[in-house]
Image 1 (cartoon, rainbow, N blue to C red):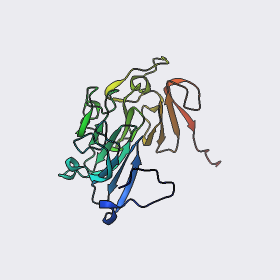
Image 2 (spheres, one colour; image 1 turned 180 degrees about the horizontal axis):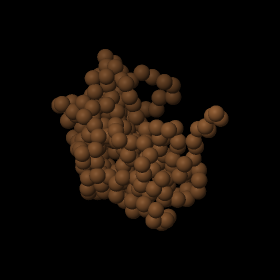
Image 3 (tube, rainbow, N blue to C red; image 1 turned 135 degrees about the vertical axis):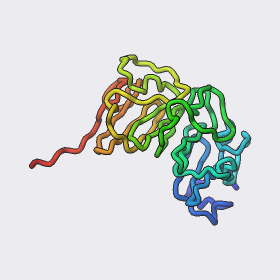
Image 4 (tube, helix red, strand yellow; image 1 turned 120 degrees about the horizontal axis):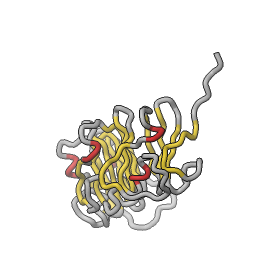
Length: 231
């Protein structure tokens, strides 16, 4: 309910006071939480519709994302700089907010004031988790595949082209290269790169800008793998 800076931890009150929150994520100027009732509440900056409330005004108190409240139960979510993504209990990815780099995965570069299901390469695939970067989004499916979309993601898909600069992808594309056939467990997005942890506890990273810890490169590269115990 306040618009000034808070320099010490303070409980978020308002409508959240009586709710049980099980997940939280922060964007550049907005915050989102998911409750144990699978509802999504957002607050903060809303200039691109990243709050999902149907408008663009800033909100100084948590607001329930009404579209998702009407039958769309959410399992987990993630905030990008000015967009938000969530995975439903039915394994569908929904996105809303800024979309000029394709980060919403809706086949266009338009913004969205309310959540909409991601189509394209994710159709028929059961997503289990999602992560948002500054202008990109990534999801892991139940089958262990990784899909990315948004800023620079045609290179981040790791097609082995060897190019050092990427173009935006308006729809999800599956990551290939060294990740092909590897069961991914979790994905995280940075400003210009992303990293994946596999079921075998191996970490892969990918970037066209050299943010992976292994130099520049458009193919996923393993950074860490657990040592095998000697027999």
